[in-house]
Amino acid sequence: MFFTTPAKLHAHGMLGMNRRNVSYISRYNDRRYYPLVDNKLKTKQVAEKAEASTPKLLGVVEHQYQVNTLSHILELYSEFVVKPAQGSQGKGILVITGRDGDYYLKPSGERVSEADVMRHSSNILSGLYSLGGKPDVAMVESLVHFDSVFDDFSYEGVPDIRVIVFKGFPVMAMMRVSTKASDGKANLHQGAVGVGIDLATGKALHAVQYDRPVSHHPDTGAHFADLAVPHWDRILPLAASGYEMTQLGYLGADIVLDVNQGPMILELNARPGLAVQIANGTGLLPRLQAIEALRHPDMSTDDRVAYAIEQFGNTAKQ
Image 1 (cartoon, helix red, strand yellow):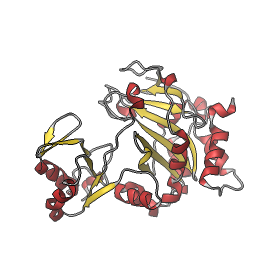
Image 2 (tube, one colour; image 1 turned 180 degrees about the horizontal axis):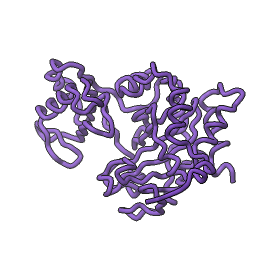
Image 3 (tube, rainbow, N blue to C red; image 1 turned 45 degrees about the vertical axis):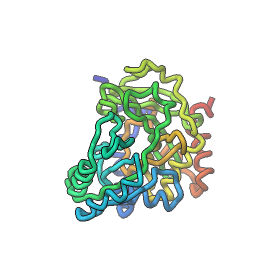
Image 4 (cartoon, one colour; image 1 turned 90 degrees about the vertical axis):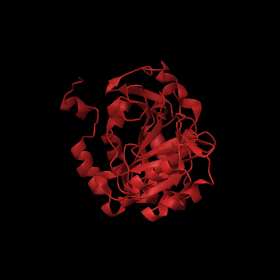
């Protein structure tokens, strides 16, 4: 187990959980805006209204009596994703990548019937996958065709990019890549690798698994020093625009890369975790305080991104 001291954490500007909750989330996130990120349907609606790139919403099932009408939506598409609006940690997400006669195909090649899809949607409505078991809504959205550029840096799963945004300024970013230990999921607590990303270039800075530095992907052997995120000039403005969409001062924007459409917002989070600091090998606190000290923080999205790159980009400082 990795041990350190409070003095060392302070010296690196590490933001602790209590300070994050009190000084940033509670202070800068008005609770009336939480539903905009806690409910993925509302997130998608505000993103589409803002014309931000996000997987297209194909249909919504809000009541059990509507489940039987789902076939009218699905017959228009050969690939789609069914997910709960209030799910977490990827639970309840059904991915369909094609058809085989009357059956739908999952990424594994497993065939599922239309009745299976309806039963899954019914389970979502009953709250099987939502926090606290609350009744939920089933969303049908377009399938993201993930860019193969990261194939060597992920085991079975799909990497995503998390950008921490404070008062509209992107302040830190990491990529979460799945491993065999994480069972193909991008959950750092289950063994996925967190890769700190340079805000100036989109290139990898530092990588950790189980909070310990790693240089290579544990399964593919790819060297993280070779990792560079394409479309980086589009990712930071997209993440920063989450501020205008939600009015939340402190948020995490989760972004994926579609091979055809480029960066897309997958989710926004009002309570992003702090592992991004470990992945980057540096703390958030100095960056947050620098923005709090700005005399004129009201800038355009492009100006906020330019400020962040200049102030927090590692390459820009060299």
